[in-house]
Every structure is written in C-alpha cells, then in structure tokens.
Image 1 (spheres, rainbow, N blue to C red):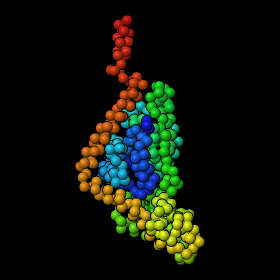
Image 2: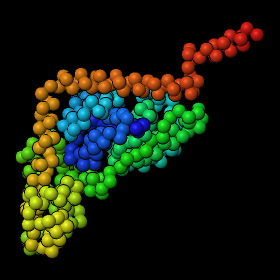
Image 3: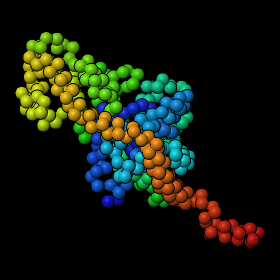
Image 4: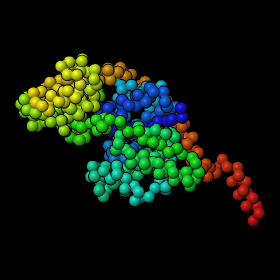
Length: 362
Ligand code: TRP
C-alpha cells in the first residue's frame, strides 16, 4: 500500500453532474477502496488565478462551494486530505526550480495549453503564469509523491509533462521524484458529459449545466427542456441516439435496476434504445425516466450538502488543519529536492568545511 493519490479542481464555479460522473464518483470509490496510503484533493486556487487574475473574488467565493460539493459527494476528510493550493507555498518554490527543466517550445506544444489559449482568446496576450501552469501542476503532483492522478482525459498532457519533468530531474540530480500515472474514466459516457442543450461542454456561461447543488425542481425542468433529436417530432417517428443528450445521460447514469424501479416495461437500456430508434416511444417518457434516475442520484448529495452548510466555520477549520498536513508533506519533498540540487548550504557541514579549507589554503 504505497500508492498515493493527488488530484484537484480549479475553484471557478460550483461542480456539476459532469464533474460527478467524470471524477467525483470515482474519487469516492478510490477513497473507500483502501488501496491508497494517502489521498490529497487540492482546490487549485492559484491555478484558477492564472486566468482569473482580474477576478480573485470569483475564486475566493468558489473555494467553499467546491469543498461543499466534495463533502456532499462523500469525500471524507478523515480519509482524504482536502487542501487549498495557495496555502502550500512550497508548491510555488518547487515550480520555480522545475521551470528550468522545461523549454518554451515544449510548453507551446502542450495540447491542453494550446486548446485553452484558443478558448480564452489569449492568442498573443497569454499571461506567463497561465502559460507555465503545466509546470506548477507538476509541482502539485510531485510534492506529494503521487503515484496516481485521477483526472479527465483533457488532463493527460499535464501528466505527461509531469512525467518528463520527473525523469529530467531524476537524471540530472539523482533519483528523487516519483513518476505518476494518470487514471482516466473507464466508460466513454463518463468522459465528457454534454450540456443539457447538447453542446459538447457544460459551462456556466451557456446556462447548460445541472449543478450538484441544484434543487429538485431546477433539475426536473432542465431535463424537460433537454436536447434530444430534432427529427423526432411525432411519437411514431423513428428517433436517433447519436447526439441525443437524454440518451447520453442515460448511458452515464442509468443502472439495470433502475428499469424495474421506474420503467418496468423495459428490461434494459438496450431495449429502450431499440424502441426509440424503431419509433413509437416519446421523448417525454424517456425524460421522465431520466429525471427519476437523476433525482435518485442527486437527492442524497443535496441532503448531505445541506447538512454541511449548517456549519461553515467547521469546514474552514477542517481545511486549515488539512492545509498544515499538506504543507508538511510538500516541505519534506522540497527539502529533498533542494538537497538533490545541493542548494542546502546551511545544512551541509561538508560544504562549510571544504570552503573553510579552500580559503585557509590560499
Ligand atoms: N488542471 C486541473 C483542472 O483543470 C486542476 C489541477 C491543478 C490538477 N493541479 C492538479 C489536477 C494536479 C490534477 C493534479 O481541473
């Protein structure tokens, strides 16, 4: 049991059902598997600031939202250390040294950075901090000697970059850092849940998210207006599954036992899909089924969140303690890194002795 997890999220908004199915659910399973010696879950506020520097208040407000979402989903602070990135300044110091192991052209080739530069209209005005965030992410991971980084597929280039930094560091300064592995979602449906409007990405600005903290009515009406198949006009028309958001959500959230419970006319998702494509099955019926499943999934999360919301100061207290634990871990690694690089001048008796001799023999 020497496996260690580190993962995290940028606190730029509340977490939605895409986060749940793509990562939070898995994290809770991993947490409860007993397979990991340590688990660190980081609220990446410093990384969030790399493209929100003009709006630190947004980041500040969303830290607690993200932590509440974690707790609501079943992340247990006794088993998983939840900490805030900026409260561990050792991470920044590590990044400063790693920066010398990475070239500008390597960063420019990082597909995630490339895509995000386009998304944020950065083209020629990329903040340096944003450009180098893959290096800071390597610090986050290596500071905790993480072996395992559960992330979405979009983060694979970050892990690859981290692995390169580790190999480079170890080859120049000696075996010090641990090379991590990414753990990505198993099922396709969990990899990227579309927005309720069928658009590829859920985003606050598009208003197409279902948040973990949404109340039952909000979720129900979001499903009622969910994008399906524009060619499926009459119930008798044959329906299409490709790009049909309701079915994508069913792929992600439905389980065999849901049929007996909410839709006993069908035995499986396969049968339901078959009827839909044949014609004669209305969208409303499928949506109602999805709404029941989502409610079953979200109701316990919502209830737990409401409990945690009753004592916010206790959550900040928990975070403060976890940040200290995280800081200790990172400080240990930083001191190993500095020893390996021999920037440990005051701890190195040999250095002082040899310098004394050198000057003495002049
Ligand atoms: N980049 C991640 C995101 O966009 C957040 C993150 C920061 C992270 N540091 C990390 C994820 C280290 C995994 C490991 O959500």
